Image 1 (cartoon, one colour):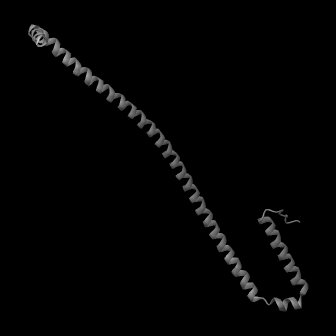
Image 2 (image 1 turned 90 degrees about the vertical axis):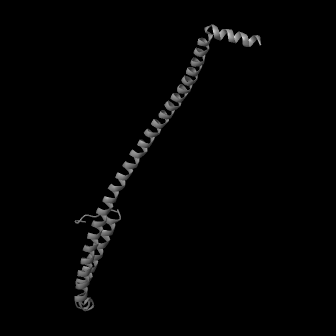
Length: 146
């Protein structure tokens, strides 16, 4: 009971001001500590998000560069395909011309009548084909004077 009497006399003589100040100071310290902890957590999150943003920007730049390279390759392949189609058309026209010439000629009759002429032309044509094959396959490519 003496303890309660002591507290009562402390409060009635103006001690309540000190008690109120201590309570206010306690709340201020508690909320200040929580605010500081929240601030440090937010600062850490901002740092993590900034690092993640930089990483994602780097990945995005690499993806954009890869897409640009793919687009360049696609355009190159389209160009090569057009060239191949043009070459195929030329080859088909040449094959049709050769077919027309062969259908108009009677090589058996001509070979019997003039064997030297046909033999020379066939040998020259065969040499031309072999020369073209050597050039196309990366072998020694003889010149026209060889």
